[in-house]
Image 1: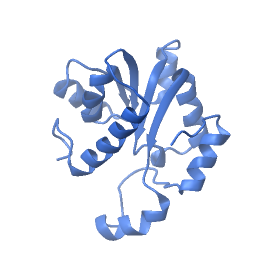
Image 2: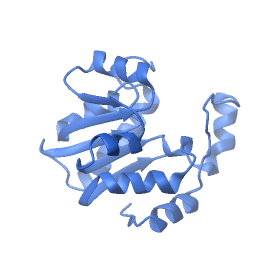
Image 3: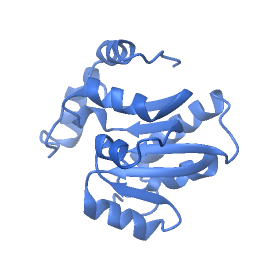
Length: 172
C-alpha cells in the first residue's frame, strides 16, 4: 500500500485532515500554485492538483522517478528545499504542504526559513508531523526502528515555538 497511486489508510486519514483545512481556509478552484515538500510517490500531489498547479520535491531520486511514472501530468523534482530554491530562485507558492517530513529534518529552523523563502506573501503552509506525545504508542504499534536517518519527533509546544520563532503565525 506504500507504492500504489492511491493513498493507504494512514494517508487517507492525513488527507481528510488536510482537506478540512483547505475548506476552512476557503482554498478552492484550480488556480493556486502548490508545493509539496517530501512528496514521495506523489499520491498527495495528485489530490492537491484539484486545487491548482502542483510541484512535488523529494530527495530520493528513485521515488521521484516512480512518482513521474505514476503521475506523468504532474511536476516532480529530486532534491532538498535548498537545492530547489537555488534551481528556481524566484518561484513562489500560494500553498506549501509538507506531511510527515519535519521529524526527519536535522535543522528545523533552516527548513522553515526555506519554506518561507518559497512562500508568496499571505501564503499558507500546512505541516503535519507525528506528535512526540504519542511516540511510545507508535513504537508499541509499529515497532522500535523507523529506519530513517533522522527521527526527531516534536511535541506540540516545540512545534508551536518553532513556527513562531521562524515568523509563521499559527492559524490552526
